[in-house]
Amino acid sequence: MTERQQRTDTETANAVARGINIFEVRGGAVARRYMEHKCVPYPVIDRVLTDPQHRRQSSPAQDQSEAIAPLGRRDPG
Image 1 (cartoon, helix red, strand yellow):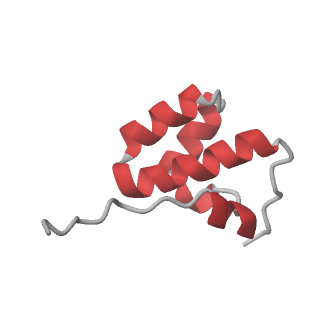
Image 2 (cartoon, rainbow, N blue to C red):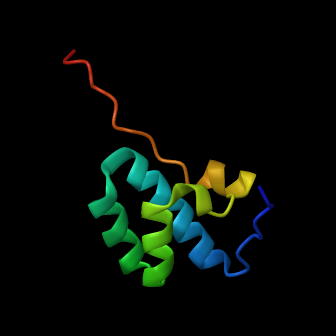
């Protein structure tokens, strides 16, 4: 597999990284709405949501700063 280039538009790259994380936690519809709101081009949204093997690699900084986790259960107390 060839190495993919990093996106030079960091704002879009961060929106895509967050969108992928949202996709993993909340699903495609929510991820698509988020990336549309962040003005990610439609072909990019379609590619990252439907063709995971062709996603660009995120940077370690993106992995850390854009990470989201599912909401944990709260103890009633």
